[in-house]
Image: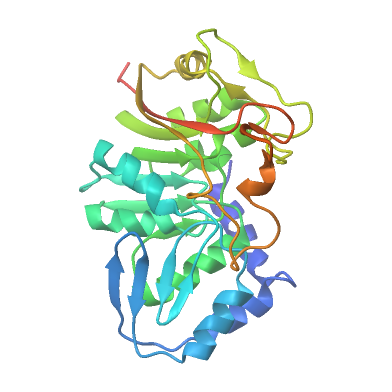
Amino acid sequence: MDIQKIKEDRKKWMSWKNIAPLREALEKLPQVEAKITLDDVVQIEAPLDEEQIHTTAKLLMPWRKGPFQVGNTFIDSEWKSNIKYNLICKHFDLKDKKVADIGCNNGYYMFKMLEDEPKLLVGFDPSPLYKTQFDFINHFVKSDIVYELLGVEHLEFYDEKFDTIFCLGVLYHRSDPVAMLKSLYRGLENQGEVILDTFYIDGKEEMALCPESSYSKIPNIYFVPTIKALKNWCLRAGFNEFEVLETSITDEGEQRKTEWIEGQSLEDFLDPQDKTKTVEGYPAPQRVYVRLIKDKK
């Protein structure tokens, strides 16, 4: 696979009719020195034209991950992503490591990871909109983060192998989860780790829920395994170690509708009479966070 050619081809995506006006808005942003705070809110303090910043940020909707504060504009994203990050950050150390974030969205987690001083930080996501959101924030942060318009299927062919790969909230979107796990495995250095989170269902059996047409109104969710089934998938993909780090239940304090998104959110995805079920009658979303290790053969 010629990754360089794919990269060049995907640069053209930035000139798509619906993306070009957003890129033009970014080009008009001022060059300023900013104070950056990488707290729960990724905050940018600088002398800015507040109307310009607010208008540009609104053009880039929907904002799924965050929150961000740019000047006086608070981007209250659908997901309070700091909740997930704070849950898992005690389980990793990225100092001087080569790190990848698969399905990185607008880069919120990568901006947070800058505090750990990784040697290399690369985001993979094929969405030109999320890349443009990233560029909007990074215009002021001025980080060395590399953002590639690539997917997990390109990871094993990439120029670098990684010490740590994050794959947060992606696995259930893949119709062949074992194949995806193999791609993560091949993208790692020996002794490398994957920090993975995915939906799971309760149960001691080695089984998975296979939604008929949607799960929480999301059509591209194919399998929701028990933790034991997830472990088996990971072992089949080649990983030698499987460690459960955390589990959590997604609630409306973490995912909710705000003025910065379009359409529905978690409150619309759950049964209004029984929040333990989705509108389809399946168990409501729960997440498991695991560490996978690639040992040297």
